Length: 69
Image (tube, one colour):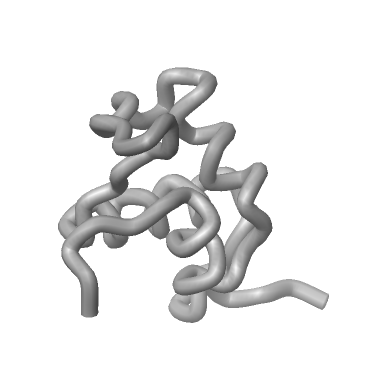
């Protein structure tokens, strides 16, 4: 597995839309990563934090949370 990912690749890995990952950086929720050729170079170590932030916003379901129907 690579050690650096683009925003699109992170979205594919985490099963969400690319704009949602971008928004975490654009609104300051997460600090901007370095860029390579104009694209975000997101380190693999950031994936768990990105996943947590997406779950905090309700953009990815939390498998451990109970769901009311």
